[in-house]
Image (cartoon, rainbow, N blue to C red; front, side, top):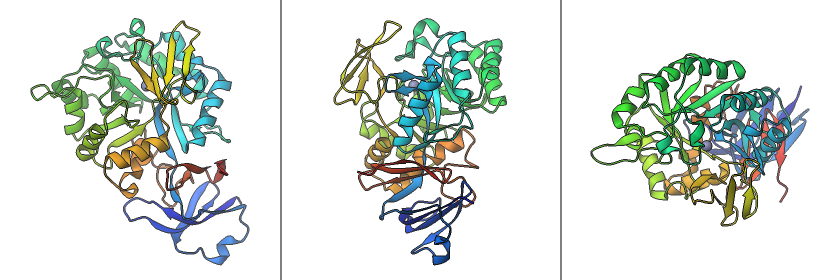
Length: 392
Ligand SMILES: [Zn+2]
């Protein structure tokens, strides 16, 4: 029987204050945990005993919107590159993620879905892949951001079916202001896919309507959407005031101002904010210009923290989950006890995997991250096994 014991860690669980104690993982799952010192008998026959050194033990991060890094992208549909991306994520505390597509033609999208779906269920020293997030192609070109406008189109039931048959979809971002797209949302929702309003110019009324068609969240709040005004609250107003919506947010302090993050915290609260990275191909690379095979180019600047197209348009982020949680906790003027679930449980709930992961509860998978007081990841544990360890 595989058995891992973590001692002397500050443990964060739902519905109670954090406490310093121990956690026992047995056969992939969280078997038990408690305050103070672990009973001596638990130390027998352990495969690994980990000294948490008083650091914070959180559920492993769940990133439901992330495209790629280190020169690799989900759209490359290359197993080696998927593995490289998943290995980068585990170093940043992510135990589960959704490889995310970019707006492209049917064929390229299907190729990407097929490739990443092959990794669902695979285990190793890399983050688990739970399925895919399709970011597009059913968007509003007026809010395309860095998405390719020539491939933005209205949904057809046939293409939705093709995508659903190609592999395991967990989430799709769609612009809800078009009737064709509302119909598509219903098809995806019926198949158990989490529906998010993204790259959209919807009105507040459209956002009210979208709830009736299965939409439950918005994609990267504030970015790629109609903003708030007092006579037309837009997607931002809908996202912040309608209880039916959770919201993704990129907390790199570039995509959204600290005060805007604070506003999301105050309006949506601890259960409906979902931190994402939206990492793209050049994330994790040093400053420079990176020409792409397709003729496009990315500009990485500010010590690898800003990613833009040569036109100056933001092209995704170089954020990692532990930095996002650190920024958000500070910007919300909150404690880690209040915000931890924004980096794990809320996302797991949104994509329907919270019965098995996303929080420290008995019987759930032992997907964990140990972070130091500066939020640096010291260890990532996947299903009870150490998948990454930072010795520094
Ligand atoms: Zn994205």
